[in-house]
Length: 199
Image (cartoon, rainbow, N blue to C red; front, side, top):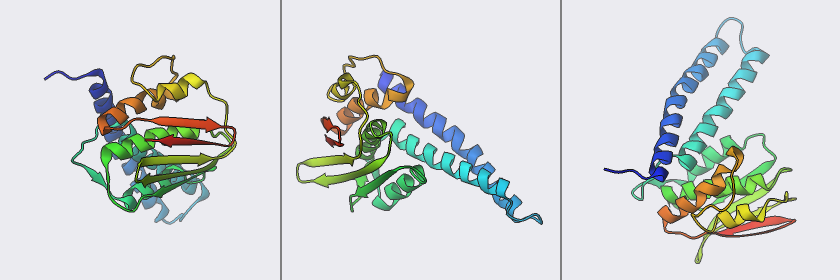
């Protein structure tokens, strides 16, 4: 069986997240045990615990965004909200998952990638709302936007990447392929006060 570069990238994302989640979980358990010891909850342990928790949620988020997904898999809204709450805890970005039903994993994957695109354009924070409408899915972001190369937004419309991407922009290149897998097209628009992405 031949695998496309896209499939290999998804497999790599899943493998990395899978291999990292176990040791991070072990560190988390170790910190918890230390906190139960005679020294109690020291400030240093609290700092380590917060960092480990943040890393844990980031990996869970990246596992969805960069890993493999199947049209036979569904994700409950409570699970999506849990991951998003952990991912953006302490962030200047507020994210609302305004969907009350289970969602196909490929759609959630696409939504997470597009959320990263919106986040890249909101350096000072803001609010992002992701919802499902009669016409499809909608991501609305409000906040003072950073001027991004129009080529990046155009990249979302096609799998033929026409710009050179940096590691910090890789989600712009991956989103069109995720949209293709989910049977969706991406229609982004933006101005100085916000971003709207239909998919």
